[in-house]
Image (cartoon, rainbow, N blue to C red):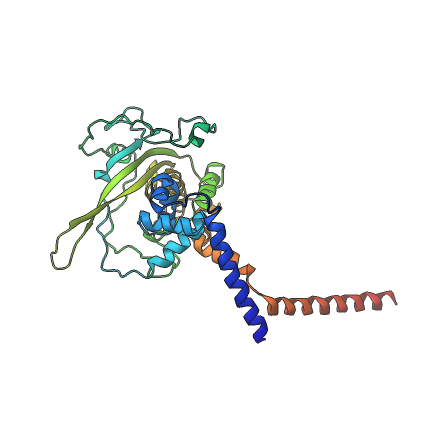
Length: 361
């Protein structure tokens, strides 16, 4: 037994060394710096911050480098580090209405107050490989700039609500659920659902959001508004008793507009799905908004028929750190369990063969 354990330790140490060598790659090439990752792999960094539920670009870049570019492993590393940090309080709710907008689009109105701001997007690019990027030392693109509009830009959902066409959602005074301290429980309120979705796996949520548009759920969505930019984070120190600004973060917000046929208590109107994620992550925010609206089916008196409308299915399986742990633990030794299964199958086969032999006689 001692020899087996010792051999296992040696193999694990060697695997760690091999992993470090694979991570570094060809030592003749310059090593990636954290600044390069943070500045040039921005969308990957943003995804790791969102799914790792920790807003720190430097740490997210470090996690990506350590994980060899595996976004899920990087999110796992970031969450593990996050649990070691001291918590001194909670920020005030973000005021995304006062966002310093870098990108803002609506698929429901062409001309709307504040205008459409395309910003940095792949939406209008040709999906062709740009071999010019393979040339080292290419000059940076020039970006035209204008003075920022400091006026508050109204939300599309509010424009509809003023006409009575959009369901207004009550401003609850209850303390929101904190899934970093309390385990997920059902029935889950909307604050728990949104927090779970905000750090859920982008690919999983994208697939669920897509399913709602293919008939697996009562959805006919329109992008009411996507806005991406910087918002101020405020905190109220107990000794002061009033909020102070402690910094700014980049976020992406999506409000999805859906039809609602009405119920015994509600007239026909539009309802919304909501998504908010760290950084520039509009695909994740859109998927989140689609799934959030699907999860409101029971609340709105709609029939629950699709996977995206099942809160337990969605929330338990959208967390990629949980899913990774459960799937990848299958790689670890299960020798005793398998031997038990093996003996069980052998016994069952022997019984079955004996029964066949008896029947033949």
